[in-house]
Every structure is written in C-alpha cells, then in structure tokens.
Length: 288
Image (tube, rainbow, N blue to C red):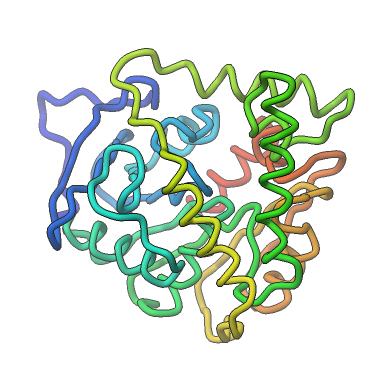
C-alpha cells in the first residue's frame, strides 16, 4: 500500500492539523500521524528519547511534507501506542519494522533524531532493502564513545529545568547562552502549536527504560556501518552534550555515502535552532 490520494481527500500540509491514526500489528496498536501528498516513497520520522508525536518541530516536518508523504509514529509503549517500552534499541527497531510493514510499505526514507537515529541505524543494518535514504541527526553509532554518559547528563539537566520551572529540552537541546536561550523558547512554542488531539504524555517509567536502552547501546559492540549503501545526511550542533558532536563525525567516517553538517554555537537541538537553514537542506537531500 503506497496509496495515492483519493480525489476528494485534501492534502494536509500542516503537522498541527495532521489527523491522529492507529494501526495494529503483532498485538500492539501504534499511534501515528500522516501528512503531505500520498504516493511515492514515504518519509518516516523516528523520534528522540521520551518523545511522542508532539515532539516534532513543525517547521521541519511541514517543509518535508510539502513534497513527501510524511509519517510520524509512537514506538511501543510511548504516547498513545500500547504495550511495554522495549529495553533495547534493537527491539525498538523490530517494532519500527513491524509498524512500517503494517502500513504496507516496502521502501521508505528515514528522518531520525537522537535515540530515533540509533533505532534507524539498527533498522537499516537489519533490513537494508527497506531504506532508500537516511537522515541521522543528533545521534551516534552503537558503542560510540560517551553515549553511555547520556543518563547522567539527562538527569542533571532535568534537575536544572525543574528548579527553573522550564522544559528539560531547553537545557538538553540548547546552549544556555544568548543564542541558545531564545532558540530554546521558540522551539518549545512551536511544539505547542497543535492545540487539539495532543498525544498522551510520556510516563517516567517509559523514559527510564529508554535511558537504560541508550546506555546499553553505548556499551555494545559497534555495528559494521561500512556496509551501508544508502545516501546518508548527518547533522548536529557543535556542542552536543547528550550525544557528543564528535559522534556525528564518527558516523560520517563509518558511512561512506554520507554528508555531514555541523551547526555552530548550538547543541543537541542544532537542527531546530537552525531550522531555517536545515529544513531546505533536508528537503533537497530527500528530493535528489
């Protein structure tokens, strides 16, 4: 099913208005949203740690959806998807595969961020025939140096955010400086543009299970990414405290068909801080 648009079906081009849908496979009901023109190869968005459907920057997803069928989904046990959160990145990738096949797709492009980029790497290693192009942002390879330290950084920033009554993403994704602070607030405001049919909040237990999975990933033997033949776009900020920026360079070295963009004066959420520059680059890459 790569479904073409029904004649009377208007194309939704705004993520804020994308209808909430579900599909059931393997005993799990997956929540997802779709937008953009149907037909062609869809772009599936793989979200970050403790992320649900409400965590995608509409400026990026809307830009991609102008010319592509875009699908964002909640992995098992997250947001409105049922089941228990897996405690390994590999199991998350298996669920993503189940979800994609349940929608009837044989070929997809992937847009991923952070933990989503780890899940995407496993998926493409296990099912290379499924993925045509890969966008990996704010992420790193299995066994990447310093990934297992994400737990300490995350808890520390959550504490800092709690003390200042801020969203933890303001600390985790952005530098606390003259450029980072306003970019952080603007990003959080954009995430709140959808006012109806918001997703189910992510529970603390789910978040902790995902953190354990990331820690395990950081301490595991690396996958052989030299086998990947998919064109790959890698992007990050130059001061990523969650998934160190050097790991984007590491990915670039390992994946021979890859391009790397590092944005200055920005952190883990560099692509969100520089969305005006990054969105057109991602669109051009996917359209090639």
